[in-house]
Image 1 (cartoon, helix red, strand yellow):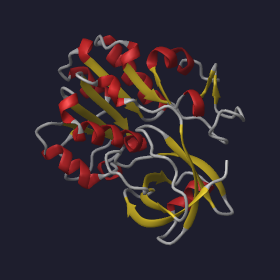
Image 2 (cartoon, one colour):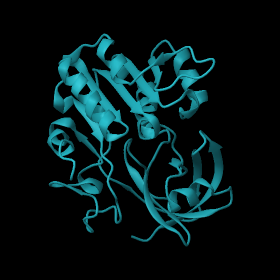
Image 3 (cartoon, rainbow, N blue to C red):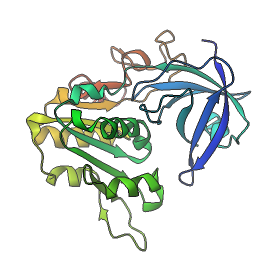
Length: 271
């Protein structure tokens, strides 16, 4: 429960309300992370929140990469942190995406908005170990073209011949020549091999639910659709109960679970 001290050594503005921070340890580094895990980030004098790790798992160093969207007091303080700012880090915590479950299968990554941040390590893992997987398809949606994270990296992904990238927006802007609509639209028409597909889905809950239902209709099994749940996490280690979702403690049993477990829980608004 004692945070390690990390210092902000880099800050990249992604969108109007999101930045990516590079954090390096001032003392003991936390253990290496698995794609989909999160840390508890502490802004001095403000508080602590759970933030997914968005870095490249294939890079062996002690630095952390975390993308933060300013939506509250703590996330705003972290968003505004300049190089040289010291923050506290606990973790990594939780069950990750487990990309190894998709070895020798097609990998379908579906991201909505900032949901691309926890999914970026999956894409980078597959690209670094391309021989282990079959096709890699990434479907990413945002409200407007200016709200896509990692715009430079998306251009790099789109130029590769070993990755199929589909981008779509809710509202087009001048100069946008891509798709307009929800991520479920490309999901409904993409050529898929349902029996050999593992899907990794992250975004707002309605988007994840509709995406999963679209994939189910196309024949992808529920236990091959993995989603990342988000609840109010306080301790990160399954002790305080703040993140309880039905029988699950999201920080301990998630955040990543398969849709076979999550479907019934996400259908109940009160949970």
